[in-house]
Length: 275
Image 1: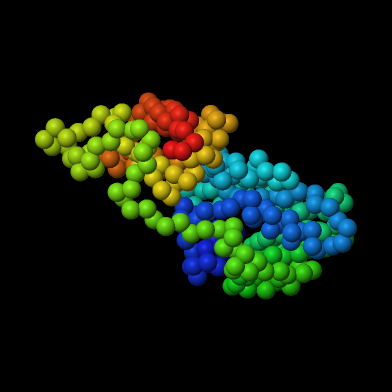
Image 2: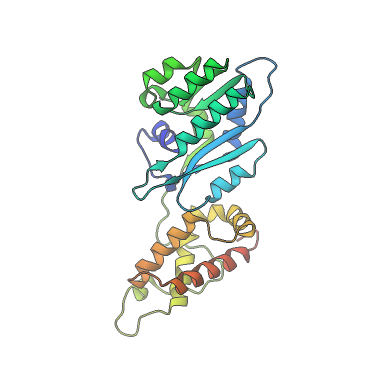
C-alpha cells in the first residue's frame, strides 16, 4: 500500500519498489498520530505492519520489526510478484482483536476491498474503524470500502513525501570505495584475448556494483541486518546473483553462491563508519 500508492501519489504512476526509499521512523510517527487522534483518552496498543516477502525479511522489514510498538506480519510473494496471505493476516488480526475486546478503535491503511468483511465484523463488536489512504486515495480505494468505514482520512501528498523518497538511478560509472579490486567492465564481459575473470573477481565486482549509490546509503542498516542474521537480505541476494550472472554469462553453482554470500557478508561487516 505505502509503496504502490505512495509512488502514485508522488509520481502519478506505479514505480518499482527498488526505486523507492521508506523512512520507517517518519511513517510510524505519522501512523501513531493518526491512530491516537481518533478518540480522546485512548492508548496505542501497537502498529501492525503487513507486507509480502520473497525469502525472509528485507532490511526494511527488519528495521520496522525492531521499532518500538511495531509488529511485523509477513505473507509471501509468488513467482509472478503477487503478494499472498497478506490480506488474510490483516483480516484475522482485526477480527481477533475486536472479538477479544482488545481495541475500541482501529486505524487501517489499505485499499483492498477484501478487508471490508473484517471491517463489518469488527464493527459488530463495537469497534470503530477508521480508513486511511494516500492522496489521491479515491483513485485506489473502492467506494464500498470507504462507505463501510466509520471515518475516512487521507495522507496528503506533502506528508507522503516525508516518509517516501524516489531514488535517482545511479550512473553505471559510480563506484563505492570499499577496498575491492575491480577490472574494467569491458574486460569482464569478454571471453577472448585472455580477458576472462576468476569467480572470485566476478563476485567482488558484483559486490562493488551492488553497493553503489543509492544502495550504498543502506550500508549501516545492512551491516545491522547481517550482524543479526545468518543470511544476506533477499533484495541484496537477488541483486548480487543477477550481477554475477550477467558478468559470468551463466548461473552460479551452489558452492559459488555460498562463496558469494560469505564474501559479501565479510566485506560489508568490515566497512568503517565513513565508507
